[in-house]
Structures are given as C-alpha cells and as structure tokens.
Image (cartoon, rainbow, N blue to C red):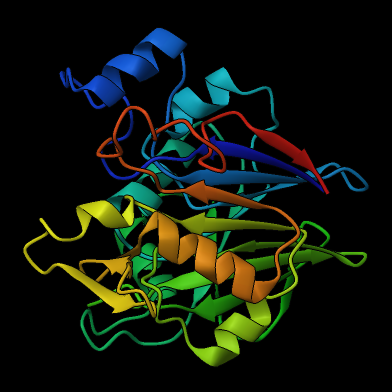
Amino acid sequence: MQVTLLGTGDTTGTPTPRCDCETCTAARERGVERTRFSVHVRNEATGESLLVDLSPDLRHQFLEQDVPLPDAAVATHVHFDHLHGLGNAHRLLDSLAVHAANEVDPVTGESVADSVRDQYDYLRPLTVHGHAPYETFSTCGFDVTLVPVEHPPMLCYGVVVERDGTKLALTGDTNYDIPEASRAALADADLLLADAIVPASLADPHPVGGDHHDDEGVPRTFGTKHMTREGALALADELDAREVRLVHVSHFYPADEAFEEPLAVDGEQYQL
C-alpha cells in the first residue's frame, strides 16, 4: 500500500492564516504546510484509494499531491477539521462510500455514521456504511478496523488498515488513555500515525494542564483531548511500531522543535 500524508496539522494548520509566530514564519520560509488532517491510502494491486478523514482542505490537498481521488473514505469522528471536507464530493466524485462507526454517542445521541448521513443527506454520490467498533470490514481491497480511542467528550476512533500482512495504524484524535483492546489492535504496525498536538512542555500553561503523567512527571496528554509529543512517542514504543510519524501537529511547537523528526509535514509518502 502507498500511504500519502495529505494533511498533518491541527484545526488551524501551519502556517496559520495571518499568524507571524516564529513557527508559522519558518514554515513559510521552508515552503512546507500542515493542513487539516487527512491520509490517502492507495491499493496498488486494485488501483483503488481510501481516504482516512475528510479535511476541509481536501480540494487544496488533491491539487498539491499527485494521488487519485478516493473511491471510499473513513470518518473517525464528527469534528469540523476531520469531516467537513466531505462537501467536496458534490460534482467532484461520481460516488463515494463513507465508512464510520455505528456506535451511538451519548453526547450527540447518534453515531458517527448517522451524523454523516444527517449532515450530508443532500450529496447524491454518497453512501454511508456503519460498522461496529473492532469488527473488521473490507473496502478498496483493504481490511479496515475502527478502534475506540479517548477524545472527550465525543466518541472518536483510530483506524487500522491491513493488506497481505502489511499494517497501517492511525491513533485518531486521542489522549494517552487508549483502551487496552484498542492498543492491542493498533500494535505491531509497519507505520503508526500518532496524534501529537504539542510538546509536553506546553501542557502546564493549558487551563486544564496535562494528564497521564509518566514516572518522571511528564504529561502524556495535553488538556483532555490530545497526546503530547512525549505521549505519542511513549505509545509508539509500547505498541512496537516499526515506524512512527507524529501528526495533528499545531503551530504552537517552538520553531526550533517544529520540524524535527519524527514530526510529519504534508506530502510525505510511504510504501508499505
């Protein structure tokens, strides 16, 4: 499978519009971007393409990256920066199968699959398929599994994509407190894409602070919703990932850290 990181940023992206911080300035000088999150997975055997999350930057991403338009997509949760690029399906795609969890969210009163149906019922190319967490389904020649993670207060899912013994794992938006069953499902990936919104050093100024501290007191969660860089790396080590790229990265990283390994930028491509 060919994996292309279309979008590696958080909800404002890097550079953030009209921001003149050192990190956004450095991104402009380097000619790199971190647009809102999305990952393209191409099955070279069938020629089909799967999109994990539907970034509001979808149009820009497909203009920038030389990859085919998707045959199917997975929606991990209903937050704007992961779902609302779906409107691009109108007059752009003849058809698009969207896969999402069918588990009812007590906060919204409906599942992610139901939310997609309700919000995008006007899109004729769209067919929505609901799936139970941990139950593997097939699309684009891949075996795909939605795994629950922790992104309070709403339900959110990581994703596992497998084919012929090769495994891509995405944590989704999550704090460090991922359920054990989901950790087992995400383990032993050839490539792990892990949410790492800020370095742990920025947790203290957050109104909620940090959480899930390690033995040395380093927070592995920033606030309540996302992992710190240190948390993501600790998780990758625990899951024994062959390779890890840190995604959902904010412009709040100090400029001298913002482009260091293994922080990803848009356009990276991996052959698994």
